[in-house]
Amino acid sequence: MLYQLVLFDLGGVVVEVESDRLVHQVAQLLGRPFEEVQQAIYHEELLLPFELGRISATAYYEGLKKRLTLRWTYEQFVRNWNGIFTENTDVTILMQRLRKRHRLMALTNTNALHLDHIKASFPSLAVLEDWVASCDVGLRKPDPQFYFLALERARVRPSEAVYVDDRPELVEAGRAIGLTAVRFENGRQLEQDLQAIGFNV
Image (cartoon, rainbow, N blue to C red; front, side):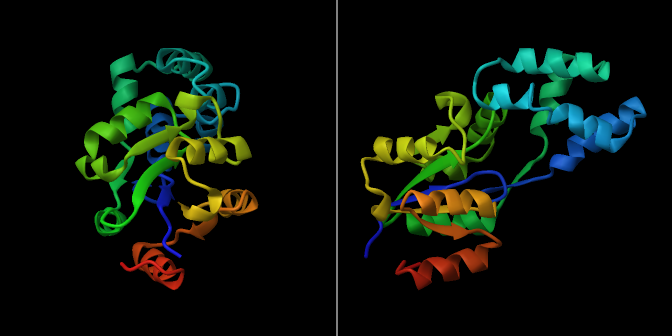
């Protein structure tokens, strides 16, 4: 069948993420253990509300500063917070080919700072017709309603869409609501998996 829509996760698929880079920077700056800093940065009382759009970027920053006694200015924080992404050109080149016959959308768990940065920094992602982001809609994967919301916005049925993600549990969540889902490992593998389900790429 000809799938109408391809839903792409962003981090770990379309853009590569050096998440440990920020943790190492802060740990080195403060002379604190990596695990302690990592726990603070990803603390669910901070990061989860930030990714769901319930707190602002400045509120996340203030919370992190308090937890770690971090002396970065807000501008320093934003620069380092966003400095963890590089474009996965194998995927973005493939997306350019896919767009000739299919609609492309982003479906991502992310926060407002990362979302704005990715949109502004990678012009190749203009091929995405819509960005369904957790921080904008107040839902996160693997919540089935997040997937259904994306399909509703695209006006397609689950059977008409393919979903690409690098995390197995999120791939399974997509399959559970009727999507054809592909687990991403690398660009060549993704191309082969899409060909195997009928894509001409």
